[in-house]
Amino acid sequence: MLFSRFFMGASVVTVVATALVACNPVEKNQASTAPTPEPVNFVNCYASLHGERLVPASGVWFGVNLDFAKDSPTRYSERLRRHPAVYTTFSPVPIDSVNGGFLDQKVAMLVQSGGMLLLTLEPRAGLDSITPAVIDSVAARLAGYNARGVMVLLRFAHEMNGSWYAWDQQPVKYIATFRRVADAVHREAPGTAMLWAPNYGGGYPFRGGKFQARPGSADMKALDTDGDGELTAKDDPYAPYFPGNDWVDWVGMSIYHWGSVYPWGSNDLPEPGKFAQMLEGDYHGSVGDERSVPNFYRDYGERWNKPVGVFETAAFYAPASGGTDQMALKSSWWQQVYAYDIPKRFPRLKMINWFEWDKYEVEVNARVDWGVTIDPQMREAYRKALPDWLRFAEDVDFCGVDGRY
Image: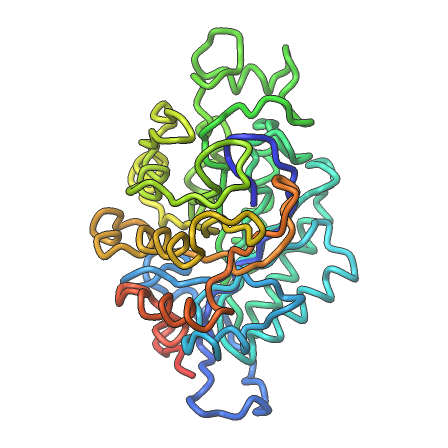
């Protein structure tokens, strides 16, 4: 998670665990000790899916980004009294034995509880570390997860338009690498979809980061979309990084309310309409005038006919900062995110994942509570605010069977 406007070196790998027991539903009231169903041939299973990879037939997937070190799908579902369709997690790539073990444990949880996995893979050693052998290993691992009944949404090398990650602002190498990963995944793991997830373009080109494009390089030439010889806010923050229609199944980004005035840290109410304005590149508020940012929803959801995801969202609340009441602040954000007219306004929007973490954020040198389900009063208010257009694990219908519990 990284606020779009300034360099913030958070490092995450997101695994989207979509709440699917695709083709292998767990029956209602079935004991957690029940044997795992036999593996399914997902090549045949995928062939029966409608149109797009892992897209709900109607409505919007409800997802959550959990801190798996402190929480679990079972505990979260018990609190919310609903089963999310998507769970998000993170991992570096290449995937070593330790991180592979962590991923395997998370998948095992989903085999029991149901859900799709949204996996963000981070090539922290740079794009050159993604060799053919590494790609084959990733594809084989995902195929194994699919065979166990867990669908995967793969977010590879996210925020590639930033300047803080080792794979950032290298559009030539990034596109080539993304395509190779996508080719292998599409060939070997048909229960996995490829997500393309740039950073929100406000503040582009994010000067001051360690991995800015080098002047005079081929990357700089590709990024200079207005041809003036410089990389500035006038250049397109998305287009040079788009891998192409055949390699991308979903498009999306993270949209957070970090506060109102840099350097952040205060608990401020979001302006009305901020969530939708950021998705459309029409934000003009206390953070600044960002209306030069392209309309991401139109340019990549509508133009390319792709499902759009808000892969992470939440509202900043630092308990030590005082100011706005936590319930008022967070509810004002979720009322925007889950507004009744969202599906009509954004019919290509097919996934929203809440960031359910309480963690130290280096950007503000403080603990930030992003979550909404630990406090009983807030949890009940949040649960009641969830609209009927959201789709949960129990709503999943793939391969002719549902995902009931």
